[in-house]
Amino acid sequence: MYMDHSATSPVDPEVFEAMKPYFVDNFGNASTLYSLGREARKAMEAARAQVASLIGAKPEEVIFTSGGTESDNIAIKGTAYRLKDKGNHIITSAIEHPAVRETCKYLEKKGFEVTYLPVYEEGIVRISDLEDAITDKTILITIMHANNEIGTIQPIAEIGKIARENKIYFHTDAVQTVGKIPVNVEEMNVDMLSLSAHKVYGPKGIGALYMRKGVRVEPILHGGGHEKGLRPGTENVSGIVGLGKACELAEKNLLENTKYITNLRDKLIDGILNSIEQSYLDGHRTKRLPNNVNLRFTGIEGESLVLHLDSKGIAASTGSACSSKSLEPSHVLTALGLEHVDAHGSLRLTLGKENTEEEVDYVITAVKEVVETLRKLSPLWCEIPGAERRE
Image 1: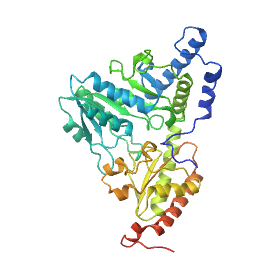
Image 2 (image 1 turned 45 degrees about the vertical axis):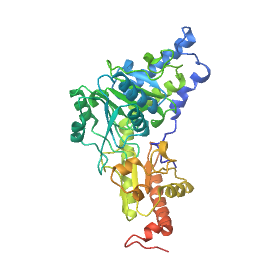
Image 3 (image 1 turned 30 degrees about the horizontal axis):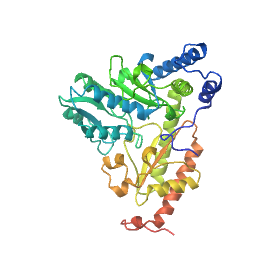
Image 4 (image 1 turned 120 degrees about the vertical axis):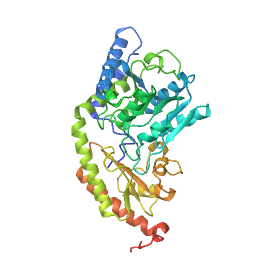
């Protein structure tokens, strides 16, 4: 059973059916003038409107990209390069996705200064810290809407208000929130917003960047001038159609799916915390994504836990799929103040609309069994006062 929807989601059958004609029959290049190309262009613009509708934007404010990482890079590097004569200071958070974090680190090597705001125990940025960090050289604030590992939701509307008052561009990585909770670019006061299809039952390799009308950034790719010159290259029409359909379905079923998945999440959290001693929830208890459960278990190594769960038919993770091969502890968990040994003992379970209560019950039981098994073998657990080696 699949419990790793923050890594990716299966393509919805309706999305797949919508995409199929654009592989074989309507395969035209959307930049050509004849009818086959015009049909592709028409499908692209319909998808653009579907994406815009989901996030409360205008269709002309939606730029198609290859996914969240490219959208983040265009927004951050593009702003930095365009406004470098006005300032060189960027503000972000300590728990950003690598697509933002590594981009900021790259820009530091190019002479930009970056402030990484702390998030404290519950994983949330404090507005007072943001206000204190702003200088007359600040040109961009980029803070994710919700974290991909611990699911905490940031006060984006408040951050956007402050950015606007200070005439600073504001970008948010909303890859984990679009289609899962209400997202409205006007209410959030954002200038740019990144999203990705494969987190919302669409195909991999396609995403979008919302850019408020009037926002200007420097292109980081150069070519034929597609997507207003910001994302050159022949358009991935089938992928774009899939993204559009996924957004349409997400908007249609948003409230129903959110309520259903939130109930599963709470049952999963309570079931595990109540049945396993020295188990802890990472991140805020309620200000979190409806599908996110991030737990840690004293005396347990996360990778072993994931592998044992896999043998029981459960797909889970220890954190971001983009960093799953790293031997370093999660930068997100250490930003919460956790010691390295505790950060290594995390488990991320992220639910989807196809999961059931029966699956949640099974996962609760399986996690309990695996934790007990691993603790019998763990020298760390045996050293903890009061811990017992149960036979």
